[in-house]
Image 1 (cartoon, one colour):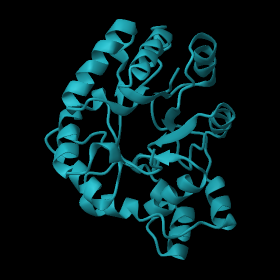
Image 2 (image 1 turned 180 degrees about the horizontal axis):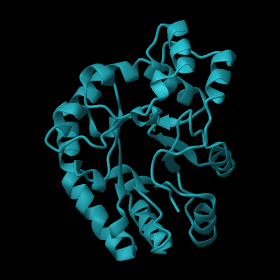
Image 3 (image 1 turned 120 degrees about the vertical axis):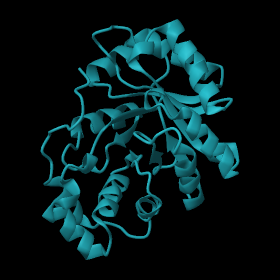
Length: 258
């Protein structure tokens, strides 16, 4: 799985083909979508239009909250494949655990079947907390390959990252740039960016990469897509990493998984 990918959340379906083609032409090889995004059709068209061999593109999609349950998850996966126009996906995730519904274990068992059939190369979860990962460990057989969680310098999720490392689960960050809510405008990030001659977004993405996170920043703008990819020609030093560590607020911007 590439460590840097393109997220297509909030990209309209009609615009998704052009956005995906631009990303793949820029060098991206990981595309992250979801049934809830409403753009699986356009995402699949973009992958096809790009001319990049299918096996070179790592495609992620997700089952939505209203499709939890064994049979309904199998149906939802078939529908996602149909919309994408693909024979398989590389990673299939449970988008949210929805603990109030109490069905995420049977949903995950459906993912295990999809994985066993080879229609999802790997399976995982998103927004799962320790207690939900514990229950999966007790009641299912396949360790989630990934847990995709909200993660950025203002919400660093140290406990979750440590748990994932202990269990061999990859930490993937959604909202890696803080959802445009002030992180990139802060003086600490600006100082690191000036030091390296990079943009604030680039140094934040570099922070993620050096901590071992997989990141899927969202953008529909060609210039920003290219900028976000320009993070492999420099490194942050210990003082830079310390400056980012000091930004921790423990304040999530998105919904609470519970």
